[in-house]
Length: 123
Image (cartoon, rainbow, N blue to C red):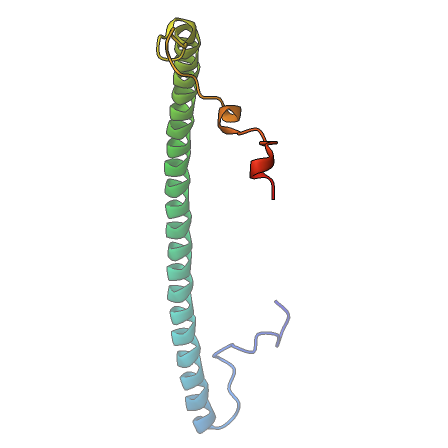
């Protein structure tokens, strides 16, 4: 260090005894402030580490849940394919879906009445 550059040197006195007491009091305040600052910084780092750990655990849990949901989607997709093939093979054989002799079949156009051209019904 260069000479005279350390303004916090306690061996350096400013001249009067009351100034020495002031320096001692200032040094004590600095030491206490530094200690409080060190403790606050340590607590801040601990909180930051705890937050990072919590986020990491949450991320792992979400990834597990995502994997489980993807597995369920895959199973449900396979179920849909299976049931669709069962339905496709069943439709031609199903007596309910194919009209039987004597069954009434209602088509949308069956309820449409043609216009009556009789003079009686004209206005």
